[in-house]
Length: 133
Image (cartoon, rainbow, N blue to C red):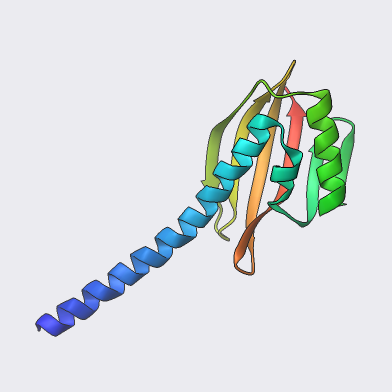
């Protein structure tokens, strides 16, 4: 009977560790992405872009390659240097994607939407939006 309890305990422990690993992977990318946005660092932000990114910034909207998206975000940060960035809300969808909604403040405020999805074993930004409030 004790062996059976130990097996059950080990099963649940391994399940917990696996689940924690997945959540840590998602949360660590959001933390890194948030830091890059706070500092206006397009190069650090682009490290987390998927090979193509759905991007919305004032005056530019579409699906861009990773390098194109980096240049567009760099231009946005140059024209709108950061004063602050805070995550106001975040969540996870049924397919395991994670989203965050925040406020990027420069001379004006922008509602910021970040969608992170898992591709193979890596979490990447699939969608990024900066919309003036």
